[in-house]
Image (cartoon, rainbow, N blue to C red):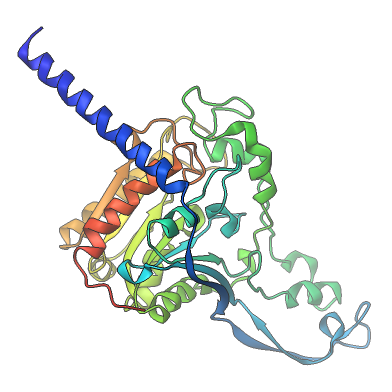
Length: 363
């Protein structure tokens, strides 16, 4: 046995021991009772819209849905939170979901394991789960639907309601190369995929104005908390950066998971370079087709963005999980079988790139 081989074997054994020790500690931590200082919910953002009385020829109920002329609130965003007893030691994390989903994304996994919201709380972070404006418990403007029903607006002006099918989700989320055929090394619990399908709900983002009010609402949460990390996934993956361009005063870090990175000009890059940024992608980026989306192109575009931020003097990190030895991760990596191992990578980045560089102000 050569000295070089012996050294490599020793390093492998040490790495395996460290990994096993980390897993043992994680299992022990998960057995402890979850102790909270507080939990609750609130809304952020939203604006009033005046509705006139419906014409006499309006459909059933009249009055824009049956309540007559008046004002409604639209585009508000629902947020629920949990704060552990030691949350003043760590920066809060705001988690925002992707297309055709809600904040359920971050909760218990489809096969019943612990989700990131609880795990981050157990690791000392206050966690805020937001439903994008126009989704789940958040508000949207439904007046155009009623206007079409009442004949005031032609049907071709109805907003599109985006609904993801099981078949499309399978390949777009990279569970396998084709529907019901999983990747041999796939990390998503495909035996419980029907539970994920139940999480997929109509996406009403087409009812929203431009710019998307979720960006402003995310910036507002960070400012309200006097400092928070914004985490987005898929459709909302680049929302932390868009929020920072609106108001970065409360944003301590930006975590963008599995999304295309928007093209930014020099001034925008300069602004974003002031906030630590983590971008993460899973596996099999070029191994599925569907939805007109190229994950490999998205990854390469984000690599370019990371380099632009670095060139501007910023702190930007790309975590491509296969390069870190984690194989088979899907688009829904927060629900994959190794989701807590991935969470530990993010928590380590937060510790090194956000909390080590900034004093955490008590909230």
